[in-house]
Each structure stands twice: as structure tokens, then as C-alpha cells.
Amino acid sequence: MGKLYTALIGLSIIWGTSFLFIKVLLTSLGPISIVFGRCLFGTIILFVIIILQKKKIILKKLPWFKLILVAMTNNVLPWLLICSSETKLTSSMASIINATTPIWTLIIGFIFFSSSLRKSQWIGIFVGFIGIFILSDVKLGELYSGNLTGILLMTGATFCYGLASHLTKKHLTDLSVLETSFFTLLISTIMSFIIVWSTNPRFISSFITIETVGPFIGLGALGSGIAYLLFYYLVKKGSPEFASLVTYLVPISAVFWGAMLLKENIHLSMIIGLAVIFIGVYIASIKPKDKSNVTHAA
Picture 1 (cartoon, rainbow, N blue to C red):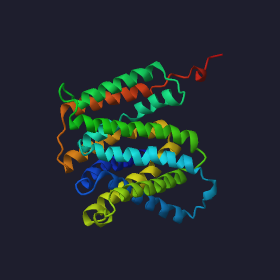
Picture 2 (picture 1 turned 180 degrees about the vertical axis):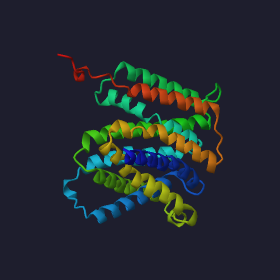
Picture 3 (picture 1 turned 180 degrees about the horizontal axis):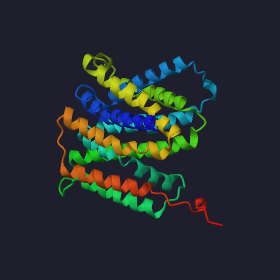
Picture 4 (picture 1 turned 60 degrees about the horizontal axis):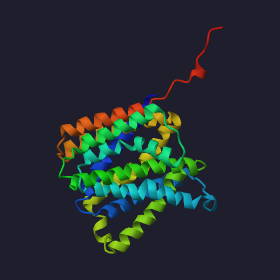
């Protein structure tokens, strides 16, 4: 059990610092360039792992269209939205909004995948959105402020994550964790490269510099490569519910790093909003007791 908790804490630190690295990279690169770098470094580290494991993959048997769909919804689009949101928000606030991903996963499952929702899940969703409202601290007359724009962009990213989780469960269960992670990142690298090349053909000259290599290693190799493997390790050796606990730890890690290294201010509305979101996610995750498992005395 100690290894599981070590992996859980390690994953929360890695994903928490991802928001920090994005903020740092935004000082010299645009959002789509950061997405490309994150995908590229993540692909490289997973490719090295595949080589070391001498894993044989039959390319013709891979569900390419489904991999492309998951790559777009789980990597390219949400990462672009996250990077764009952090041009408007602090890394701390972006990470807090990211904690609503489980709530969006429930909503998307209900609307698009015929999932049924319990009463507690509906209550959790409602409470979660109250948390977002408190977090946004939106005042009348400021509905078009940069702060609200950033919140909407970040919320769009969590929506994408929720959709991608259902698509992955429905279409990619026959692939191994390493295959899914590597090929979705590889496809994302190609897609983001095409986009960034078409918008800024000269981006290579400013892409890899002394200032960007370190953050890209942290964001891509760790945040997108090693982190994928840690997360699925938690799912396999622990449980999906245990792995989902990282949702609670990532904002704490991100807020800490944002305050310590970026000198970001932590407002009361952020703390209250985060607490309410956590309560909502917790209520939504409560499962009814299985009466069939109750042992009756003879």
C-alpha cells in the first residue's frame, strides 16, 4: 500500500507543477507551441520505454480513427484550452477549475453515453457548480472580463477530459496502457505540429532554448509521459476510485507551487470555491451500499 500512496503523491506533484510549467512557457511561447512541445517530449519518453521493453506492436491492428479521436479530446484540444486559459488566469486558479473534471465526466456520461445518475450525483454536480461560481467571483458588469474568459476556457478543457475518458473506456479498452498513451501522444504531436507550422513556420527558432528545455521536460516528459504511466498504475494496482483521489491533491500542489515560485496571490474566494468543489466531487462519488453483499445470520 505504501507504493500506491507514494505513486499518488508523486503524480499529484507532477500534475500540479504542470500548471506552473505552462505559466513559465507562456512568457516566450504561444499556447499551440506549448501543446506541441508537451506532446513531443511525452512521446519521446514513452518511445524510449517501448524500446527498453522491446514491446512489439502490430500497427495495422490499431484502431487509428478512435486513437485520433481520443488524442484530440484528451490531449490537443484540452491542453490548448488550458494554455489559453493561463493567459488570463493564475496557474493556481486553473488547477482548481481542473478539479471539476469528475463532475463533467458524470454529466457527459448522462447526456451522451446513456449513463444513469443517482440522486447524490445530481446533488454533487449542483454543489460543484456552486463552487465554480464562488471561485469565479464574477460581479455584475464584469461578465466579459478576462477572468471569466479564462474560466470558460479552463472549463472547456475539463469538459474535453470528461468526454475523452468515456471515449477511451468505450473504444480503447483492448489496447495496453502504454500503447494508448504512446499513440495518442504521437498523433497529438503530429496534429499540433501541423497547426503550429501553418500559423508560424519560423517557430522552431524560438521553440527550443535554454529557458524552455527545463519546463518542457517537466511538462512533457514527466507531466505527459511518466504521469500517464503512474496514473494507470494506480488504476491497475489500486482502483479507479483510488486513482481519482489525485483530483483532490493536484490543486493543493499547484496552489503551493504557484504561491512559492510565481508569487501568485491566494484569494479567499479561491479557497472557499475549492472546498465547495471538493464537497461536490465527494458527494457525487458516494456509492450506495450493496445490499447483496450483506451477510445474514442463519
